[in-house]
Structure formats: C-alpha cells, structure tokens
Amino acid sequence: MKKLLSISIIILTTSLLLFSACAPAITHKTVASALSGSPGDGVNFEVVRISPFYGGVAGGNPWWVFVVYDIERDDIIVRVQDGDIDSTPKEGDFISIPLGKLEKPLVENTTFRVMVTAYKVKHTNAPANWGD
Image 1 (cartoon, helix red, strand yellow):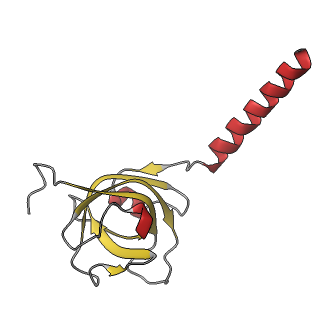
Image 2: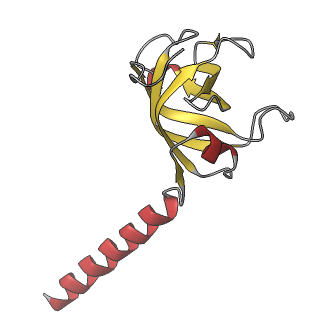
C-alpha cells in the first residue's frame, strides 16, 4: 500500500511539474504588453478589433491572418486556424482571444516583432467605452 501511494505521489508531482513547464510564464492582457513580450508568452485579449489596414483579413482554410487593435489603438498580427474561430472574420469585427501564444512572425519585418497564434477566437461586442 505504501508503495502504491509513493508511486501515485511521484506520478502526480511529475504531471504537475510538466504541466507548469508547458504553460506560458507570462500572460499579456493588452496589445502593448504583448508587443513588448517574448515568443512563448501567453495572451488573453478580452476585446480587440480586426483592422481594415495591413491588407484586411487574409487566408481561410486552414489559416486566417489579420491585424487587430485594442482600445489604445496598439496593433498586433494574429493568425488562427479555421477551426479555432467561431465564424468567418471580417474587418471591423470585435473579437476576444482568450487563449493565444506569442510567436516570431512568419515573415521578418520591422512592423511586427511578434505575432499571436490564437487557439481560441470568439466574436464579441464592443464595450460601451470603446467609441469609434
């Protein structure tokens, strides 16, 4: 019985350590914070808007790529697989990205030092204080 308990404790401890090692150390809640972050950091944007600039919305099956901005008008590029977004993204849509990770951009350029790979994207409404 003691041996079984010891093995269970070792397995549980190892699982917790592995899970915490895989989770992002930092989670950014604003675009400005994410822009100063590093690849591997997490993101959780409550409300961002798809920008009509930078080419609008590109792609489709399997990847969508677009730029979003937050209420402070900071921009960041996002890519999301078709199955991870709840509907077709369009310029001007308000979305939330509750689960994403900062990555190096697919194409090196001076506009975006990092980009977000989103693992969950939901359409949402603009907050009352957003304005236009």
